[in-house]
Length: 147
Image 1 (cartoon, rainbow, N blue to C red):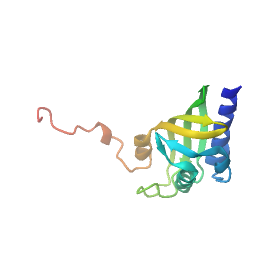
Image 2 (cartoon, helix red, strand yellow; image 1 turned 30 degrees about the horizontal axis):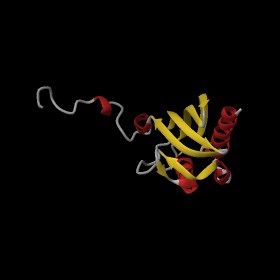
Image 3 (spheres, rainbow, N blue to C red; image 1 turned 60 degrees about the vertical axis):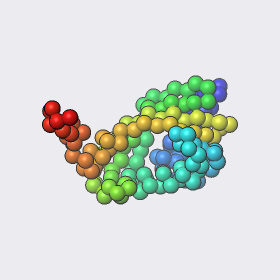
């Protein structure tokens, strides 16, 4: 039953916090020692991160494509969709509808998110909003034989 309980915490975090922008449940769902890829960040980091992404993509929606739990870890394959209507770091609003896939591992400790490890398609996102030309990643850096 622990695996199902842990999956429920992650589902609730995505639906109540990320999908709505409601930061109220953060203290209940995120442990004070919450770590991002090994670095302690805490609930304030989560609030800032969600607020920044929701400002850039006010209609942001996360969809769970697959979820697997083992021990105190929950692995989630997500698709994020939204319209780029606000700044995202130094990237100005493009008005473009985007879709990004992400793989996230959350550690759930005593009913709260304790840590996260994630990999998302940041390059694809930047291409979709026009911050990077679509073929930039495939351009040769040097001419052949110029090592």
